[in-house]
Length: 557
Image 1 (spheres, helix red, strand yellow):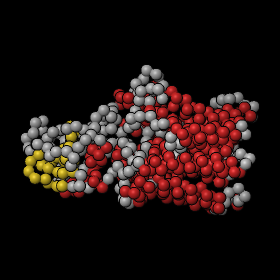
Image 2: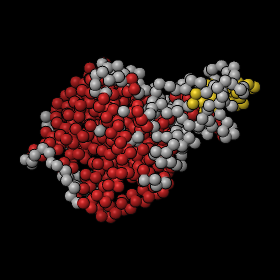
Image 3: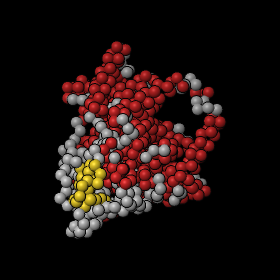
C-alpha cells in the first residue's frame, strides 16, 4: 500500500521509474530500521501478553495457504502466466509495463498498451506497485499478475482477521475461521483469479480501513490518521466505487464518539500550522490527476442511480447475474437453505453484544451493499454493479456471523455450525477452481517468436475472432504495426486499427486460409499460421502500432 502511494507520487513528479523504485526501497528500509530500533523489535515487550509470534503464526500460515490455493490454476498450467478470463487483464499487464518506462500521462505506441486508459485515470498508483513487483522479480508483468493478485487476496484475509479480532472480539482460531471463509469464498477467488485486478486492490484495503477508522476516531494520532488515509487513498485510487463502504463505517464511528463525548456532531476542520502547507500543497498538486479520476468515476457512478440511466456501458464483461448465494459461499439453493439461517443466527448472536458503534457501523455497510444489490437486480445490465456491491459487503456479513456462531454456549454446536459453513465454502471454491484456466496460453506466448523473427515495421493483419485472444495477440506482437478487418468493437477497450491490406496476415488455425494471402505459410505455430499478403489490396495498409481508443473525454462526462 505504501509502495503504491510513494511510487505514484514520484511517478507523477516525473521521477524515472528505476530511480523512484530505488528511492522508495531505500527510504522504506530506513523507516523500518528506525521503527525497529525505537520500538526494540516488531512486537514491543509491553504488548507481549496480547500478541506474540506464536499467535501471528496462525493468520500468516492461513494467508499463505489461501494465496497458494488461489494460484492452483496457474500451477495447473505449468508456467507463470495470466489466468482466468477477466477482460481487463491485458490492459492491467500493459499498464504496468508502460509505467516501467513512461509517465502516467504518456502516449507510447512502442508499448503493448500505449497509454493508460482514460477511464483508469485514478489507477496508476496501484500499477506502479505492480510494475515494481515485476521489475524486482526480473520477470515480465504478465508472469507476476497472478501471484500478486493472490498475495492481495491473502492480505484481504489478514484484514478480516484483524476485523474479527479487533472489532468483533474473536479468539485467534475463530478469527482464523473468518480468514478461511472469506479467503476461500467463491466470489473472492473469482475476483482474484480472473483477475479483477483493480477490485482486488480495493478489497485488500477495505477491512484495514474499517479497523483503522475506529482506532482513529477513539484514539486519534498522527500515525493512525496517516495509516487510515493511506488505506483510504489506495482504495479510492484502485476502486472509487467501493470507497463509500469504509466511509460509512467511519461516519458511524465518528457520530457515536462525538455523542459519547457530548460534542456537536460536526467540527469544522482547520489548518493547525501554516507550515504544513509546505508539504500539503505539493502533494495535492502531484495527486491532482489521480484525484480527478476518482471524482470522474464517482460522478459517473452517481448517475447510475437514476432508474432511467442506461447501464449498457456498466455491464462490464459479465453477461448475467451471479446467484446471490455464491457471494456467501453456498454452491446452490439447497445449501443456501442451511447456510443462510446459520449466518442469520450468528449475526443475531454477535450484534446484540457488540458495542453499539461497531454494530451500527458494520450493519450500515451491510445494508448499503444489500440495498445496492436489490436496486440493480431488476435493471437491465445491472449485473456488474450487483456483483461489485455484494462482493465487498458479503464478506463482512460472513465475518460477523462466524464470530456470533463461535459464541454459542455449546462447543459441539459451534464446531458443527462452523464445519458446515466451511464444508459448503470449500465445495463452492472447488467448483470455481475447477472452472478456471489460463487465458494467456502457450499458444499465445508462441507469438513472441513471430514478433522476433519479422523485420521491424512489418505490418500484420489479425484474422481471428474479436475476443480476448485478439487482445493478447496484439500484446505479443506489439513490436509490429497491427490491424484487423473486424477488431474488438462496442467496448471500452482500445483495439487495433481497421485495415484489409498489410504485409502479413496471422490466421487462427480454426479459420480458413485467407483468399488474399499469397504463397506458402511463412510460419506455422500450434494455433496460428502466418502468410504473406497479396500486394495492392484496396484501401492501402493502415496498420499501426498505435491503439484506437474507443472512449474519449466527452464520453466520461
